[in-house]
Length: 492
Image 1 (spheres, one colour):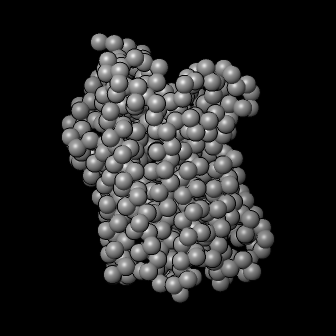
Image 2 (cartoon, one colour):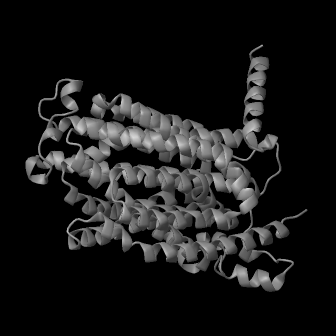
Image 3 (cartoon, one colour):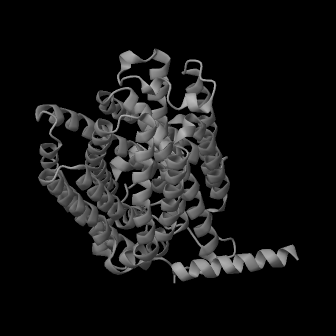
């Protein structure tokens, strides 16, 4: 009876999914597991994001650029470790992903203890949400332990976001190819956006709980660990790993040789892994990137994306900090902004992403964000108000997560397995933080040079947006050609 009931529930779930996305029977299990994993990860992240941002503001706005540089240094150390976990032959890829999520779940419990230890006599929830944060912003107004905990928490939450998301995407693109990704990545992204919405609303409605939100975030990360076990190829469906383009003979040899030289080095990933003993495997991701012009183009694309995004982030935080004085109100404002944006992203991912990727293609998808970013910078330079910031932030993020982010993940479907797990994590984590740190330094210099006029700062980001657009166009064309070559090299 229980088996029959489970089969009926599964059939209904499959029918519901089929109404939203074109999915084949063997793809449903990994699709649902991937979407639910991203749901729990993003819920956990957005539950504690307002707490992180408020803790950073309590240290003073001048500390933000330094925090971004600190994030870069931490990710440089952490990315090789994540690559090492995926490289250990004794740990299957699925189990490695579970361990990464579980590690961050436990770390959030540690920060819950540290947060309370850094307070002075907080005996209740109501006291714990306001205490030291009500003091004027600045390092000199807080104890050294308070400062260390807030800085560490800011850096750790940023690391959690990058490592868990990048590692999960690495597993997803290992299970799916370019064709299935075009159809399904929108639905998977919708799971992440729904998690953002739920986490943001939860944090907004329970902002008074303060650090107790860390407990809920820890539970959500454990649920992400459990869900990630299902991101695997269906045992009943014959599927093989996509081969590296550089090691296959294409029917179109002239085009194949030209494109192959952009993807991989003459040394295949499998052989390189055998020749790098022990701890050297940790740094193989860097080696793979340097040997592949295609991965270097992806790194350049992501670096410029991170720089532009950080410009908008600094502007948002500066306006909120200068217009809202209450710490709880700031947390609530951050959460409501995230919730508002998530509604539009979710609707777009469920209705538009699959159609855009399959019809317009990856080139249009990854070129959309640079175009929107350039127009947003012009709009903010002409109309530097809070309303303009809210509108442009919504348009920018909806474009990024509905169109560009799924397209960006498709870029990795045409590389080898080693490049997916090792090089991708390095690119997503280190290059992302390198872009953040670069933007922090540039923004801080321009912000002070123009007497804190954010409208003038935006104009200096326009040349970068146009360079970003050119890189995106070239990269999209490369991916399209590689996907065709890879499809032609597969056995019929």
